[in-house]
Amino acid sequence: MDSKNDPDLIIDSEGICNHCHNFDKAFGLLPKGEDKRKFFENAITEIKAYGKNKKYDCLIGISGGVDSTYLTYLAKKNGLRALLVHCDNGWNSEVSVQNIEKLCNVTGYDLYTLVLDWEEFRDIQLSFLKAGVVDIELAYDYALIATSFKAALKYNIKYILSGHNIATEGTYMPKSWRHDKADIINIKAIHNQFGKIPFKTFPKFSFIKQRMINRKFEYRTLLNYVKYNKEEVKKLIINELGWVDYGQKHYENVFTRFYQGYILPEKFHINKRQYHLSVLVQSGQITREQALAEDRLPLYNEAQLKQDKEYVIKKLGFTEKSFDEYMKAPIKNHSDYATVQKYWDVYFKLIKILKPLKNILSK
Image 1 (cartoon, rainbow, N blue to C red):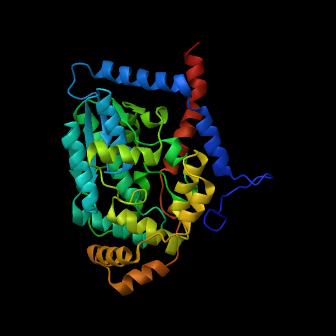
Image 2 (cartoon, one colour):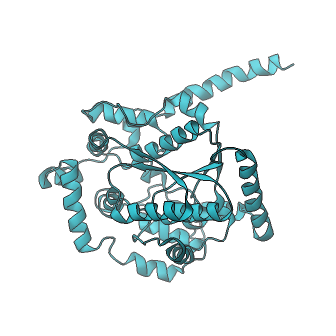
Image 3 (cartoon, helix red, strand yellow):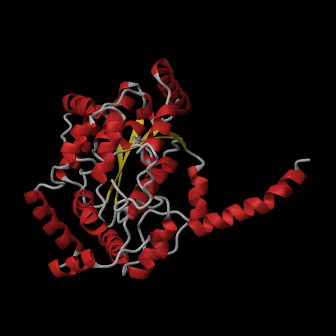
């Protein structure tokens, strides 16, 4: 990684970048040894106690990928009664569908699936492509959050288990590579400007309601409190669950595969694999030499790229010419459109105004 693909990269006098420092800090704060085991066990006990006499004691969002599959495996092994939640945006690979089906069959867990209206969601995706912003998957990532909220509210579930973990995912990717995943304001602004089909079924909440709903839940990142080696976990879920490997991280979704493997590196000069591999080096799961060797390999199998490109262009309604025009069009920032930041600015101003009043009333 360098200042071309990450303009905010900071390298100190010892040659260490800000991402390494952020990882070391976050990883260092995680409990170790016996403390880690106790934290995991206490979390399981807490979730079970709250879920007593309820149909479900927790919720897990699943994609068919490694992290959510292993998290579900651990939940079942430790006696949790989870509701699995999936949001289908029309781009699931056959492998991910099969992995989800096998996971449900083996664990016996119920699956709550929200299938997005294809014509509506396709129009939203086209809006983001026309907008020229980097986080083209913002709308889908937001839909995943909203779908979990809807399921949790419907079934009165307090605990949401997340597959996010420091050991294989690190902390935060460069800010120029992503946008706030909860920013419904940015999604609406972009779609209002470029979309043709109005929001009717897309799962969403207002900014204020979203904040209020989020306060109802407790989030637990259980993978941070177990030994989590990616390759060892893959072998385990292959043997125990019949899981099938789909290749690189997040490649269980056809559009995500094309976005990360072609659009990002070709249009935005961003190679997410470098970050994913760097995290595995930092957590000691592979060596730097192994990561560099893998990074020299093509991001895409040539035949697979040809197939995916034709499929994506056709499914989104592009022509070869119009897609090439998109790839060459100017890049825009998410802040070129309305964002949730203006709401946060108002929120913090109100806090500043009301704090003295709160202090007076509390006397």
